[in-house]
Image (cartoon, rainbow, N blue to C red):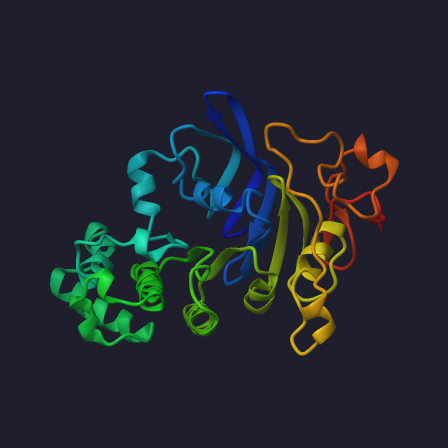
Length: 317
């Protein structure tokens, strides 16, 4: 049994002007000890999907399908059971640590809070655990007495990682955890995540728009476009879907002046979720679209060893 299983998950926001489909029929699995990356442009549904895993979406969001965490459906959990699952069995690292931390609470108190709420430690043991976690994420133990505004962006993100590890969950969800950081600090935080995940045997679901980050950190990738998964497969290897290849081509190659001076982008904009194109939703932007792409939407199909892609040009083996 997979640690996490998404079965035909769809998420719709109820707006005053009507319904907005943010996620459409996503099915994914994550095994114990595995790292899965979800990538796509802004608005592709990545963060909405991540928030749904622990039911952190606003009230105007409707979730359909099943989200199974160790076989238990998160959507059907009572609030009491959901509170027991959050932090203890699955935790989340938000992309904006400045907004994820309480500005009037000391760092140590915030890291200790999930331990005390779940009654996993006495106040004395919680303080010792906080010191241990701060050392693990590369911060001096005296930082436990600091407030969030007294830390740099990279240090605050390390605190968020310490909080996520506090109760020793089996799953960590990381939603763009390095977006607001400069490149040097980003590299440090990513190295930290990689080392901690490996040493604690924790499963990781990482959300990012940066393919290079996910390829370096994850075992498998799922590419999302307009709320739908259009490709899945190993993080290393060539992509099969035209959208995935366009994302990869948008990043310049280090040491290659030609790619730096003439980057290959993707023309056009993602579609309006309330007015999606017929057929394959990517076809208006696709450089290799066929006439049939405007009328037929292809499901994920085999595209090589352990890879699937939702494209008519991908042959079924």
